[in-house]
Amino acid sequence: MIESFQSRERLIFDNHRGQTFEISVSSPFYLDKADGLEAIENEFYNVKNYNEDGTNIKGSSVRERNIVINGRIRLDKEINRQKIIRFFNPKHHFTLKYENGDVTRYIDCKVEKSPVVSRHVIPEFIISFLCPNPWWYTEEQKYEIAMWVAAFEFELEIDAEGDGIEMGYREPNNVVNVFNDSDTASPLRIQFKAIGSVVDPYIELVDTGSVIKIEATLKGGDVVTVNTKRGDEYAILERNGTQINYFNYLSHDSNLQLSVDVGDNLIRYDAAEFVSNLEVSIYFTPQFVGV
Image (cartoon, rainbow, N blue to C red; front, side, top):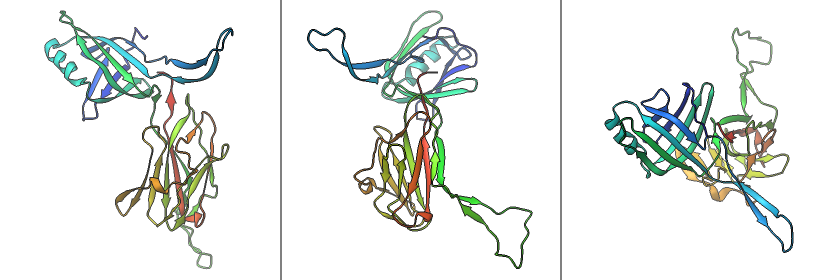
């Protein structure tokens, strides 16, 4: 539990309706203490045999996160009392942003118990939240594997007897090291972009052999995006301004739980034909235990 906050620490809630709500030591909604911002709880799956000391741990997972915030209303107590009650509607979905100087973290949450606000001279409030995904996260990171690099620069000199002008060249390496500098494995968002015809493009996690493969021929201008985030898995083709569900075009051995582990992750791309017409971008969101 954090019971002493600095002036630069802020909790900012976004209700995805164009509204935000700040709780901090510099806000009218003064932040006294918050429980659940730091530690998370591990849940073990045990098996105990007859006449055996102790237990056998067969597995574990991280439980959902509970966050409880206590504070006070310092100004315009009646107006702000109604404001805090109405904003934290249990029917709404929220993203909490934690700011502390250069550190910014996010977590998605639901109101577990709507605000309880006292009738004191300086009203006190308490709000309880449930975070189904207990991991804090930061901004999405992008890695490009296959791309064209500009080679056209000024000042420009043209050799009339030479081989012409090189406007750009294709990045020769078909492998990228995706470095996950966070606290746990993170799911991926993979974007396959065709600049011409491409047959059966795929990416492969080199160390495990796990793949995401599109069993189809893409046309120039097509973009297929595959997301492996739990509960939000999808494959979508964008063609001529139209989005098409492309889930059925994933190969049977595609791993929809594909993720990057903490540390180095070598990912390569390829295709059955016309791989030179393929550009691939890898996106992932770093996740953290606490703030």
